[in-house]
Length: 228
Image 1 (tube, rainbow, N blue to C red):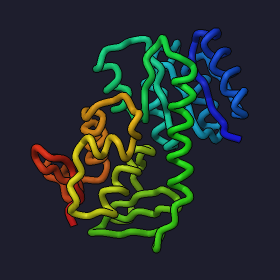
Image 2: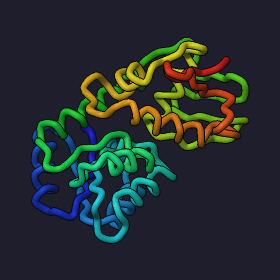
Image 3: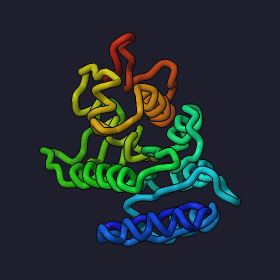
Image 4: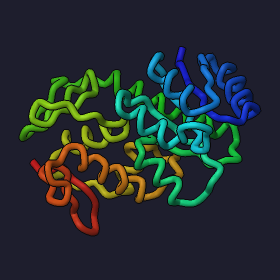
C-alpha cells in the first residue's frame, strides 16, 4: 500500500483528495500547515507528498526545500497561481512536478500513479553492477545515492534519474525534449525549461565549478551529455 501525505489549508480540498486516493487503496495522511507537514515528513516514510504552495506558517516552497535536506520523496506542488515563474520556482526548490488549481482529481491521480510507476520500475531494474564510478562521481543504484569524491550529495528523485541516465550513456547527447519524455514521461505538461532548471540544480550539487562543468556538459543548440 502506497503512503501519501496531502498538505493544504483548504480542508475541503484535502478531504476530496484523501477520499479519492483511499478509493485506490492508498494510505493517506493529511496536514493543514507547513509546520505540521514538515513534522509528519520527518516522522514518517511517504511514497509521495502533495504540497500546496500557499500555506500558513512555512510556505509550501519552504517546506519543500526543508524536506529536500533529508529526503528525496517525490513532491507534487499544488498551486492556485498559473504564472510560469511560480511553477519553475517550485521545481527549483526541489519539487518533482506541479499541478495548477483548479484541477481534476483524475489528473492528480494520474500524475501520482505515473511517478510511482517510474520509481517502482527504477527500483526493480537489474543492472550488471549496482555501483558506477566515473572520475570521482559514484552512483549506488540500489540505494539511489550519489557521491562526489566519496562525499554524498543529496539529490531529488528526478535529479538522480537524470544523472543516472546521462552517466550510463556517456557522451550521448540528449535533447531537452528527449530528457523530458524519458525522465518525466510523455504526458508531462511541462516544457524544456523544466529540464534546464533540473540540470542547473544538478550541476550546483555535483560540479565543483558549475559554470565550468566536469561531468554534465551542454551541447549548444542540442542538449546535455555526460563527458567521459
